[in-house]
Amino acid sequence: METSRRPDHEPAAPAPGGPTQPPAVPVLAGRTALVTGAASGIGRACAQALAAAGAHVHVVDRAGEAAERLAEEIGGTPWVVDLSEPAVVDTLPADVDVVVNNAGLQHVAPVHAFPPERFALIQRVMVETPFRVLRRTLPGMYERGWGRVVNISSVHGLRASPYKSAYVTAKHALEGLSKVVALEAAEHGVTSNCVCPGYVRTPLVENQIADQARTHGVSKEEVVERVMLERSAIKRLIEPADVAEAVLWLCGPRTGHITGSSLSMDGGWTAN
Image (cartoon, rainbow, N blue to C red; front, side, top):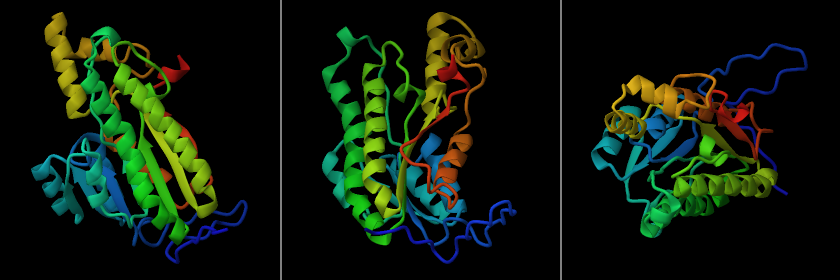
């Protein structure tokens, strides 16, 4: 059985009761990360955080100009692909230490009026693509005895809302995939977890706020508090950088025993 190997640059665990010393070098120095949907929102923040921690980041997105600008900014490598085409995953790098499955999309409609082709598209991008990415990248992690998989789930991976059948289905499936990988990968020093934010201040959410404000004739502030955050105890949107910090923590040297978990960042939604 392969065991996890601790690179020389990662600090040894402190003695019981002893102080924790900060790392002498960035915690992901020498590592390589792949982030899907990395050109904006949560994916962009994750790519920036991982790069700042020393990783070389593969910036995967279909928005070519934005992906290329970000890759140049953080010293990463852009990959301009459409992840709704399953075969393109085989063109992405397989030799990576960290995978952040983030790419996604949304469509809102009741089940009886939900376009089947849209439902299938959301499953391809948000379930099949993460599966294919992990099928491609896990063997290398196993060989090296170290890896981190972080799947950007959602509060909707833990709870349901009406009119979002495809998104809720996909996020629940991603939660299941993440747990299976956690069980299979544990003996190889690889962890797999989900981060489950509530509403995050991304371009997608900002557009939803504006649309609902126009439709209902109310202010954007009212949409956020009364509609989006109705079930949250904390009445403000989550910032992408906050999600990225949680992702980075899960990729660090002190989280090797955290696997198969779902980290809620929902402002108390799931406690309500």
